[in-house]
Image (cartoon, rainbow, N blue to C red; front, side, top):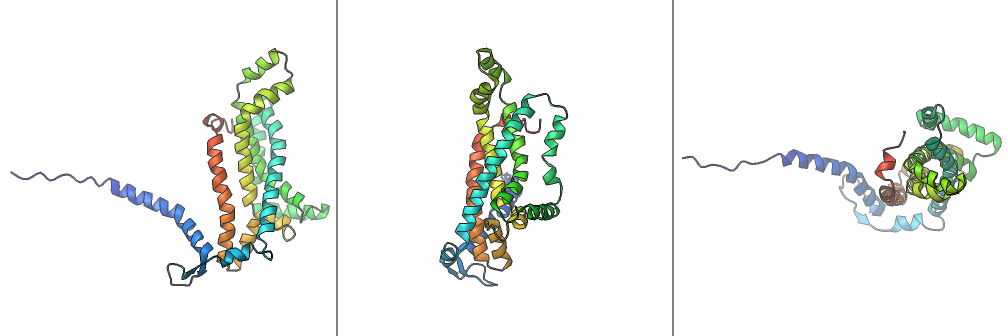
Length: 273
């Protein structure tokens, strides 16, 4: 009789290799970024930095550094962009969700126009126009440019958020004497608030990371973190560039976790409908 050998299940091997490759693609650049942020000396062909320290962090946040001004400008522009985008998106999203508008799908698609053309050619012409009216090199000009991109997220998600609110709840409020404005304020708006919060976070992150519009419209008068990152990396100062990238990365990760909490499945299912 021949001894029965246990059958080896090797199906886990390709799956483990695939998961390892995906993890390397995602976390490899992040690990390299963190290493550069704390590296004092790192030369080829060394696989790891020769010295670690915080001297570049001190340089970034020193009074002579430009990081704090860039950070404050980036945050200010992002908040103003969120405020302007929501001020336009809430009435637009409510109208698109509740009213039987002709060409409703075409109206929604029109908000994608800024994304349909190469950013470089669009922003060069916008910079020329803004220079003629005195908006080039101003916070206001940068906010307007960022809003054109932020409206894509704000309007589409706001429309989906209001469409997910049961129309009968507003009708019930109207039936007991509430005006249309009060029914919107007390019923529709609070119920759509999680979706609107998610759209605000998307707009904030889009503004915080926007480079091309900030460069052509804001530079050199309005210093922002993406511009600082570009200047440092193009000059070969990878430590400063990595620290700046981490400053942009941390709020992005934190806000995306918040988005996952607020953006419900019923809202996502109505995006674009």
